[in-house]
Image (tube, rainbow, N blue to C red):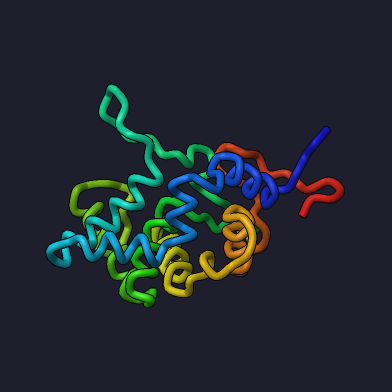
Length: 191
C-alpha cells in the first residue's frame, strides 16, 4: 500500500497538473513582469485592476463549456487544509498574490480583496464575508503577503514544493489534506 502525507500528495498533484510550461506556473514564477505588463495596458486604475484579475482567471479557469460555465483547473486542489483546521482557497491566494506583487505591499492588495468580498455580499453571493468567517479573507492575506514578498519568485525548486513550503511556514501545522482527499499520515520516507 502506497500512502503519502497531505503535504506530499498536494505537492505531487500540483506538479503533475501544472508542469513547467503551464500558463499558471509561468504566471506564478514571473509574477512581477506579467502583472506589470497587464497593469500598464489599462487606460485607468479600474481597467488595470481588471487586467490583473483576468490574468488569474485565464490561468486558473478552463474556457467556458457549452453551458457557458468556467471550471477551475484546481479541481481537487483548490482548498488546502492544515493540521489545525485552517483552510486556504488557492483561487484567492493566487489572485491576491498578483495584486501584492504589483503593489509590493500586502495592505493595498488586501484592500482589493476586501472590496471583492464586499461586492460578493452586495450581489447576494454567500461566498463573500467581509467579517472573515470563511477562508476567503485569510486566503487573501496569505496571497497578498506571498506576492508582496516575492516568496515564490525568489524561492528554489518546482512551484508545488515552493507553495507547500510557504503554506506550511504559516504556522498551522502540516498540510493535512486538500479538497476531496482524506487525511492520511505518511508512511516511511514521505517528506
